[in-house]
Length: 283
Image 1: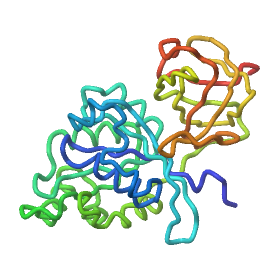
Image 2: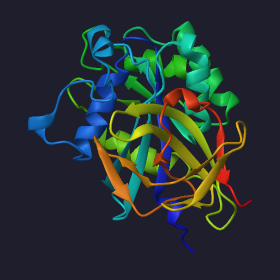
Image 3: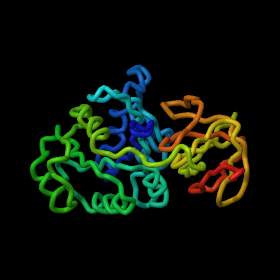
Image 4: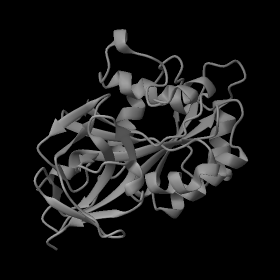
């Protein structure tokens, strides 16, 4: 029997700085039709202008993409953004904890670098399934065969699984989407169990207060539910839940395996501990 969460994939993109992570994210978002060409602006996940200026993704963001795969089934692909720098490793860890898989980007001309190895170890530590991508194959210095050998010898990953892409030109992005669906595992979890959701990020909305970004591991969270933070012990009533699809899309509930947002009348972001776990107050 098929569980509703079999159609969910939670993944992040791990890449050396300047290896095209933001561009790849943009292409995946575009390919899933989450954005019209007219509204398209490069580096969509970078909502802070300073980030767009520097091209460095600092704030963990996330987006839910709808994708109809070659098998004819509809999938929800949750792309969790991870900061590009290992300096933000506590933020990276929270994002990784919320994923089952990672796309590891290797530059077709630079090959495997020290940072690639560091990122890989961080992802493997969290038992993520890794799908390697060889990016920038459009560059004159690209040497896909040499990079495949490095992926084998330096990273110990299957060199034949690596997908050669050009994020800039949009080459083989469809293969990446199929790879996410076929190679990365669906989340585990039990919608019938007590609620367990990790808050991996939060941001402030001037009209609604703090918006929590959560990954639901077990149970269901829906409006009207009284929730408690395990660590701080504070209790709140959920007002709204939903998905991020370039803007908030309200849903009836978030169930085990899902990634989305929760609003619960919390006034300030500083009243929350990122990394805290939400559970049902009555439990």
